[in-house]
Amino acid sequence: MKSKFLLFLSVLLMFSCSGKNKTDKKKSSKSKPTIRSRGKGTKKDESKKGNPLLKKLIAELPAKLDPLMIPPFWKGHSGKMDLEIFYISSGHNRLTNTKCQGGGGLAAFSAVARKELKGKSNIFAFATGDTLGSRRGKGRKELVVTEKEKEAAVKILKVLSGAGIKNVFLGEGDLALGDNWLKTRAKKENIKIIGLDEKFVEFKTSKGTAVFYSVIEKRFDQKRYSENIKKWRNEKKALIALVLSGSISFAKNLSESKDSPDLIYLSGPRNMLLRKQFSKTYVFQSGGDFKYAGKTSIIIKQVPGKYLNIDSLGEYSQKLQGAITNYEKLYGVLEKLSSYPDSKKFRNFLRRTRLIQDEYNRIKKDFRQLENDLGKNINTLTNIYILLRDIEPDPKANAVLGKDGKAAACERKPEGK
Image: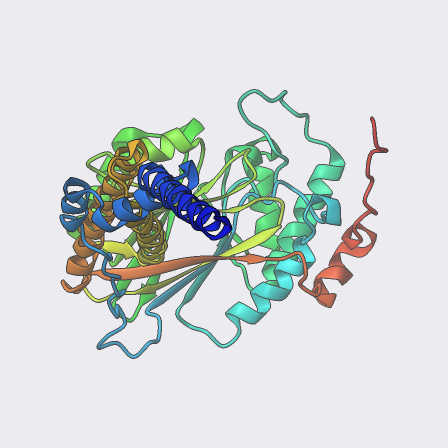
């Protein structure tokens, strides 16, 4: 009896365990994945699939933009310049500058001038207008000429002559000193004031004659100016340059006229470095107050001929490299965004990428035009500015300047004032 009871219990236990296993199997088959596992699995599948439409749009874009090489403008040339132009702009009657004002000064310019002019026969050196007189111009109260201003002008003439600068052009700021006074003082230093009796000066190069023409906005004679430009064009001058005292807008108007020159060296009441191009004319100004000197180097291949400032080639090269770098970064972002089924950011980045591509194509077109011009025996030039701040002053110039050659100490305003 006891054995039968034990057998009954064992059978009962077996049935109860089998029912539990079936219930567990049903529950496990109906269990859902966690949120984390579901999201992870979906993202993985989508990244593999991506968006065919977005990838098609990327496929229409180049993966990289080609760099452009600057053409060798010196090819077939010995490397020696046919003409060098060394100049100072708008001295404004200043002899020295404190370090706070940018340093430099007349004695520093003299040291550079002696070095640049030594042993050279192909260099034309001059000071633009507004070098002898104090800064005067529109919007400024008319200054009365003082004895101190005249003494400084005489010292400037002495130092320029000693350094080899024999041509000083007349400027609006110099007019207050008086024509007769300027003639007398300049003659003593064997310097010509171009713009008084003589309105221009010619300089002979191995490739032809260059003309430097004094133009003062306050005394401008349109008829005479046009006649001179036409005459020199007919005579096939190698270069026609204006040394102009006046406003930038006046220089721009002359540059864009039918009687435009090749180059303009500008002076006036402003004190700034200037390197601009208006139409086919280049405009330069080497700052003011004897802080910088300017130098233009020219290779003449054709007379008469057009001029190309090769400094612009370097500028194009920098712009192109910037466009190429930005394009590659955005292209990489687009590739990542195309891995998602839909991305609002993709459209924005695609628009930016296409804008950069358009900019690149525009710069490339201008660049190719310059390259084409260089292949036509075009005359080339480059213009640099020499910082005078750290130049050791010329002892001979300092001897002329005396105590006026020593720059005053910097005067800095206390903080909060």
